[in-house]
Length: 319
Image (cartoon, rainbow, N blue to C red; front, side):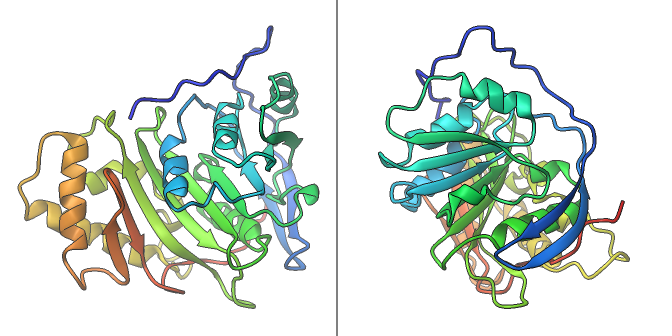
């Protein structure tokens, strides 16, 4: 799948440069939960983006019919230019409202200079590091947060994910956290649904691995996603620091996938190799909790089961 071309017009005199704001001390709070986290410390924000970078994420959401029925959507951290936010709007129904947020005011000001979307009310909003959703968004049906949390320390990333999750309204609301490569040929995503149990952790309902025809990668497919695993929130904790929540379960799933690859003769073509290994993993019952299945070409979905893969409810590190 080649990156799509869109007709969204670039305004004149818009400099698409990366901005690195000063580190910010902000309180994470949510009116939905009534709770408050200690202060987050953000690293310098790269904000790099490109047309089509989130196409695999949006394609998966479209396959689940999650976009076509959404009336209110929040896109967290659209970056240097609003390409991916406008592409998300292309997939929403006419009359929908999309709140696209970023913590850098200059990015929001530049985005406002772009032509209005013909069918969707796209509102660019200055946010802060609390990961509080725009108050005017009310009860969004979908929150998309891509290539943002991977830059945070593991504890902060987990706290940010929980902060967004508790603001979902209703069991049908969806939070998607994803990481992609620079060109959007690889994607790793966590899908969380609304209504965490009172006092309980946010539970991941689906883990999605996706590649497209443009992917160029060597080795076993599970290794392609190592740089994109929800950071270092599941994969980079030191065992001595704290109970690891779902980390061990996620790593065991990847180990089972690697084992299937070692036992199989796979194609040299990356997307074919991915599909072959995914099909064999899905056909090996009992190797991981829950259900593993392929969803079209280049997509592997793991549904670990309710409450199996939980996001630790850590507070961010104190400054």
